[in-house]
Length: 263
Image (cartoon, rainbow, N blue to C red; front, side, top):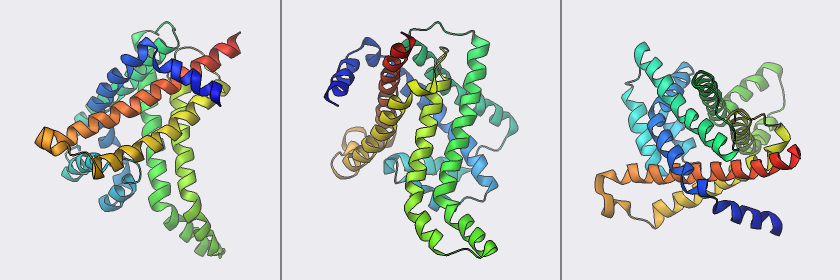
């Protein structure tokens, strides 16, 4: 354990750790609204209620970020087919930034523009699908399970078990999203076994750092005094930077495993 912590400490001071997280955070910021719009369209199919959506998000991210998300979702402005196409393209730009960043970390030559963009689109849809499934488990899981229990006359204790199990399931799904990104994003051929440590690290630190940052923003910091009406945007940017930094650090951990296996 001590050896691993020393290795992570050294990775923090790698040159790319000063550049790539900021680039990814900016790209994700620009892609956030299109990604939310696509998720919003998917959730509308299931008549998803916004209050429940907000309640579930509150377990993962700062409340100020939720305010921005809910303000956009409640406006229902993303309903044009042309805007949908533009949104998908813009959302894939965030994934494109991840692909470029992963190639820098892996020191691998970047694929052609067409291949990179095609991969970015695939990653975009995969991430959106996994997020929708994740929210579906948290919000609709009990309802669906209740229907199955009534249909097949199963024990009602299954609902109690599910109430305890749904958060581990949600965390497992987040881990799956992270692992998928780590395998698919680099243009290098990355084996499943080489991304396990980085995926576990990123998932756990994401959950911890988001909870700590949310507590800090809610109870300690007062961004409103410094930034006024821009405070929510600043909170969102800082949160995205934290997530991006951890994501790149997880990539760096995976590269070490990748190099060990390549020898």
